Length: 314
Ligand code: CO
Ligand code: CO
Image (cartoon, rainbow, N blue to C red; front, side):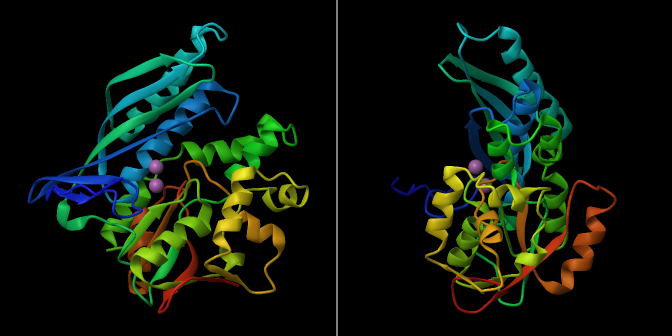
């Protein structure tokens, strides 16, 4: 895509950021993003919730406040009962309500496989946009959700885990990044992104490249969902995660102590993952305090930012 020449485009195609930002006034901009995908769990209501939380996440990752959304859906009306679509949309509506977001329209087409997601608009102060380009040497790297949803979704599809074993992952995928976003603004985070299809290493690599810094990640500090390493050892790994790992090898050095399963987990394609935040160390307490009691947000310090380039995993 050619970059937009419009001077009001504060964040556009030129960078690997989560959402676009368009300035309306000196103190007000809109942040816009769209995301949709095929079902990753069997329950239509959960699928709708996951897709909505995932779509909202890119606004939160930039420090914006989502305000309105449009549904995007595709549905095989000849093969599936219309109730299923209703449940998907009800799941999306439940998450929008929790986020304080108004769904003000949408569009559905007939298609062989269901697809659902949202186009989301948020507001943001143009002077306080958190992109991935401003991480600084000395910062701590923080992650706010555990990793492994791609492995678990594949395990569910292959019958390697039960629906009840998937519930931990579902609970994390439907949880909003709203609190993490507010806390990173309160604590003056330098950079952030959300962990989605490119996995921890892929999105961390975007921060490293955009900020022209190196990252050191302590793999033993990265929170994982239950059974992830064991499932990887049983070869339950989605193709996208293997493709990620191959691409991440170009900028990642692993110390020999890091197991093959853990290396793959760090490349696992996530759905509705947590925020990866680059934060000055003296602000960690403020971030933690600002998170407050809400248990569904982790504050896992998984590494630090240094000079140079690339990622080292110990
Ligand atoms: Co994103
Ligand atoms: Co996205």
